[in-house]
Image 1: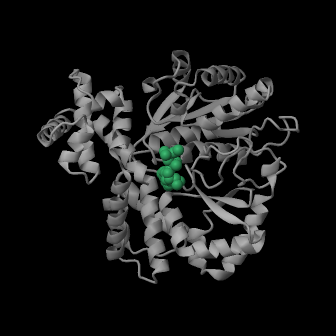
Image 2: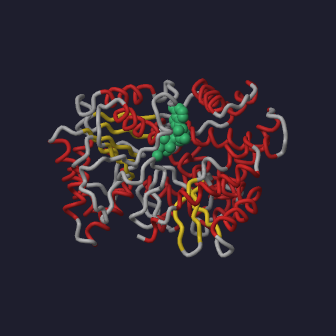
Amino acid sequence: METTVDVRGVWQECMKIIQGRVNHLNYKMWFEPVTPVNFGNNSLVLKVPSLFFHDWLEEHYGSVVNETVKTVLGDEAHVEYKISDDDGAESGPSFFRPPQFSDRRIHPGWSANMKVAPMSPFEGSLNARYTFDNFIKGDSNQFARAAAYAVANNPAGTSFNPLVVYGGVGLGKTHLIQAIGNFARQSGKAERVLYVSSERFTVDFVDAIQKDKATEFSNFYRSMDILIVDDIQFFAGKEKTQDNFFHTFNALHQSGKQIILSSDRPPKELKGVDDRLISRFTWGLTVDVQPPDLETRIAILRKKSEDDGIQVPDDVIEYVAANVTSNIRELEGSLISILAKASLGNREITVDLAKEVVRSLAVSRRMAITVEDIQKIVADIFDVTEEQLRGKTRKQEVVIARQTAMYLTKELTRLPLKTIGSQFGGRDHSTVIYACQIVVNQISGDDKFREKYERIKKKIEMIGM
Ligand code: ADP
Ligand code: MG
């Protein structure tokens, strides 16, 4: 396979050179999180954790990286970046697995080109970074954590099968479900643990069919002691994949194997997913993770800065915890960029610096959000079409969705009311004002609506991250 060029080795060479050129803190902050993905056509593809990270790396270390890569790979070589979605669901060549595994002879996951029998030693695609030890407990997640821990200690031995963890983006679902796998493996409770995103499952399944390896594919999945599937909402609308997953699920469940799933919403609210699958999902236990409260946010920031071995003053931690409230990924991102700014600009870590960072993250997020994004997400959650949002219909469910989308556009972008109106089927600015009033009233008077609104808002805010 062409993509098996030892990209990890290549990147390790580069890292050695880079380590000699940047200081230790910056090296830890900006280079350790980078993972090499692929090398082909003289292009080294590197995966970075976020857009923000990418921009920063390019701006400050672009030339270091380029020079190093040319030194190691030759003058023709160049670098391409890929933004991580943090759970391996990238859409690269389907046989490729991120090379974060300790031993390349061990299978990280399914591949139609597998030469070794599927029962051979199996590493699984878990990221060792996700453990129970570094998962901070709080009111928002302790029930989910307790359930996860019970499952990790006794895979398939509790009635929590499947265990479904659901909740908004960046709240620790992936962390928690991988922690189960890591714990079960390390403590010898399970040998064969496979973590995949539902997208990965889909891509591999389609690939297996094309290569006439559907049976091998099924056998491989069914040979697991624990199967972890992340973000099952992406199964929506993929009937053939769902069908295969249904049978995989049954086979595993019947032979006393543990299944763990995550989703961005409760299973019952999954759209475009077969009822018989949804009914399976609710056989075991469904738990949610909520946004962290203030104490938990403080505890998380403390732990993360300690883990990095960096002293962050209490007032800075408290400022960030008080102002970055939506989710943990964002919390982490803010801390990273504060530390980065301090280290790159040779500045002290102060509340002023924290303010700067929190403000600029908010601004850049705002700029990244478009009306189309908002319409798309609102349409999805209200179960109407984007065209309806921009159209003339006065159907009640469309009207409230449209008003919500207008209000969110006002809240989350810097567009003038007139422009907002024009983006919603040429309405004028007074219609937008009216819509905003209605939505504000709904939010304060109707708990269910408020919950829905918050969920949408969070989803949209993640776009800019
Ligand atoms: P999700 O899958 O729900 O979108 P993730 O599991 O990817 O969220 O979490 C986002 C980031 O926040 C990860 O880096 C994760 O390690 C971190 N994180 C989430 N919850 C916790 C927690 N309770 N304690 C420490 N870190 C957490
Ligand atoms: Mg996730």
